[in-house]
Amino acid sequence: MNRREFITLLGGAAAAWPLGAGAQQLAKLPTIGFLGQSTPAVENQRLAAFLNRLRELGWIEGRTVAIQYGWGEGSSEQFAKIAAEFVRHKVDVIITSGTANVVAAKQATSVIPIVFAVAGDPIANNLVASLAHGGNITGLSTVATDLAGKRVELLREAVPGLRRLATIGNVSNPLSTLEMNQVQAAAFRLGLDAAVFAIRRAEEIAPAFTGLSGPADALYVVADPLVNTNRARIHTLAMAARVPAIYNAREHVEAGGLISYGPNFPALYARAAEFVDLILRGAKPAEIPVEQPTKFDLVINLTTAKALGLEIPPTLLARADEVIE
Image (cartoon, rainbow, N blue to C red; front, side):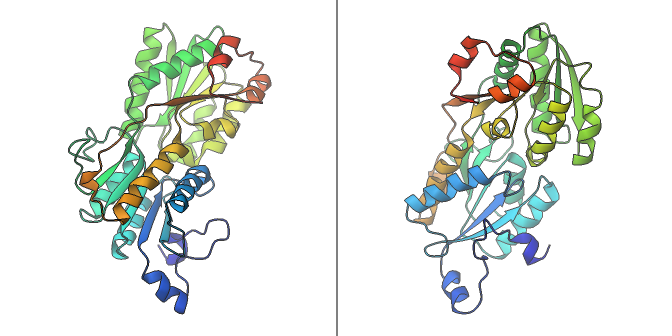
């Protein structure tokens, strides 16, 4: 991986490795390594929330702090390479999201502080020993009770006559497999027929949809770096199959998905910036307990509903945190 691949510019911003006097000045600044799980286009809202909160706290990119960007594009191999680059360049703190990214960063260093803005169960996945003390790692966990079951219930409420539920997810990701099993259990509990469309790489997404429109009344999309990186393709294929789908984050609904239910991810990134601020000012990650979200947003895209010929029940619309029209 060369430097051009490693450092991705954001919106035409100056490169993280300027020449001459600027490089000397930048070298003196504390440095954040931002390890993105997908691409800048996919994560733009989350990154913007992180950078905005940093600025509010006095950390201005290029003036009071340097930021190195690495984008994994859903590849575990890329995660490991980028994490190793951050360690080689001796960044002061690594900010990332997604359990696979955190694992890659943890394997790369036990010294550099790591903050995760989003991750699954950090204890079960051996990221931290406890929520109160995580060694060189802390952050925000998205663990919540039966989120999969709640999403299945929302789909059943939104799609009249729902009988056949399909689930698509990356079965090479253990967390995705766990969530897919939870979806299956919820479907069984609600008396729904359930089918799994397994993918392991981007090339398998389109073939997975070829048999979807007939056997499925609705689709549950299990998010992970691979799925997030290819969300536009998934939305397009779901609409072509005329299958209403539910996701874990509002960005999917803003891009054309029908429903999302999950934590406010930009808000988690803003909170992660506060963790980074504490660390840059001298706090140890072990002194900052892992936090869990307390609020979950329900977002509905009425434009997509109309395109699918769905009439969302008023009771469901009334409970939505946001309705996109």
